Image 1 (tube, rainbow, N blue to C red):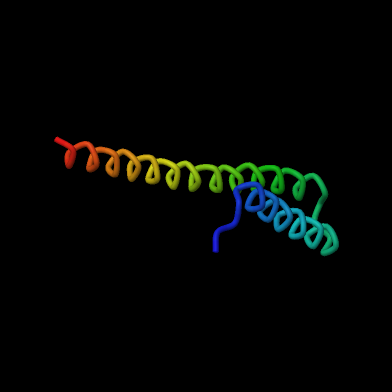
Image 2 (image 1 turned 135 degrees about the horizontal axis):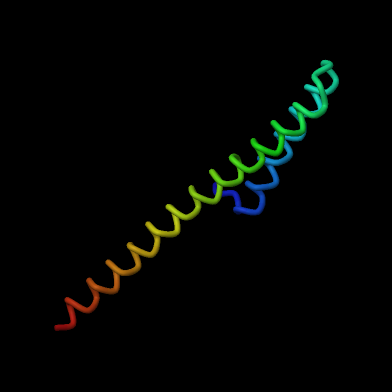
Length: 75
């Protein structure tokens, strides 16, 4: 089962925001929590994006190989 990239971004962001709220409830200073949340949201969403980029690159390579194979069999 695959999850769409938009859903992955939303899940990562929701998890980070949930963790941030928990840290605030535990008494951490708000500015530290906000800075950490922003950093982790950036890093988490960048990770999702880069993983998707690798997957798209693999799919494009498979398409090229497939069509190259078709072209070779016609000759």
